[in-house]
Image (cartoon, rainbow, N blue to C red):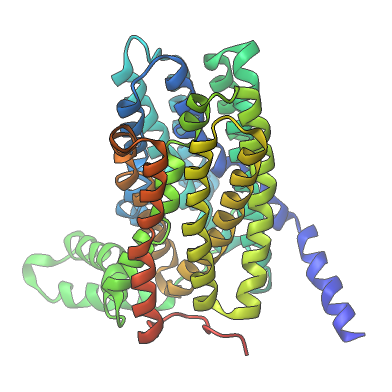
Length: 449
């Protein structure tokens, strides 16, 4: 009976309006990514942009890799007018969404055939506003939920995120034919506003001061106040910089194996990111139609990713965190080889479905394991900034490192290129081997009790 009650209680948590709100916020968070990634890649390909230039467009996602730099501002800075009226989290989210909607509309109004640099600038603006929105949503999600709801909230944010990516990728590809790209981007800009409407209806989370950080702020302020040349606002500002900006990084640097941890986070999905950087262009050049790509790569791939997320969560419960990372890392590496086989077979729709299914299943499992690992690394006193730092590193593989994919594909050809992406997964697995032996510090058990 107790076990049945626990199951029912676990299902009931998803009826809480705060948990359901996170589903919508996940949708708003995932929507912009494809607009500067796979969807923009299809637009650039159809406009006649070179493969090398399309590959370089992966670097427009740089703000996702650098959002930790302004995460302390999002965490502590008050916005004139907005913070007092709406609260810190809601004020920042509305501000970020205004910027994001304007940037998406600007991107949709450009013409890559005439002013490619303007398209790139607008894409960077979209990524910057989107990365800021993600930082606020992560903080709002943690603060609005009770401890027992955090797991359900994490599941909803990922699920909503994937739905948002599906709409802005498969949905955009379907709509681009009858409506054109500018109208598609205008529709996506309107959908982003759902996130802002949702938090206005739900409300501002209760203030939960981080005691360790606040205590440290008082200590540093008192120490600086004792210096005649550092009194008043100068002392408080210097203390704010030390505690809010330097504190999260200094605390992380005290952990055993922290450099290896950062490198692992950076490289774990490198092979997966390299393969995905040119996936849409690869499908188009292989001879698949936009409709086939939307149906197989986006819709079927979405279902495989959702299954992968579920299996990744189950795997962590059954095998523990580090074993799950090993299994998912090897599956991700092996799935890239199917792309090489597809390149040799040509426009084989059934083999495309197999390749997309395996790749998205492995990618979903890897994402679930990696998100769990990142969450386990965060100190509760600096969750927002440290999570922004760690998630930014995962974006580096998708932006900086994968921006050279076009040059590799051009010089190696598609089959060898995808073989090379499989080998690119090896550094992450080597680091995982070292971390597994060292037992680098996390806040969760690596093996279930």
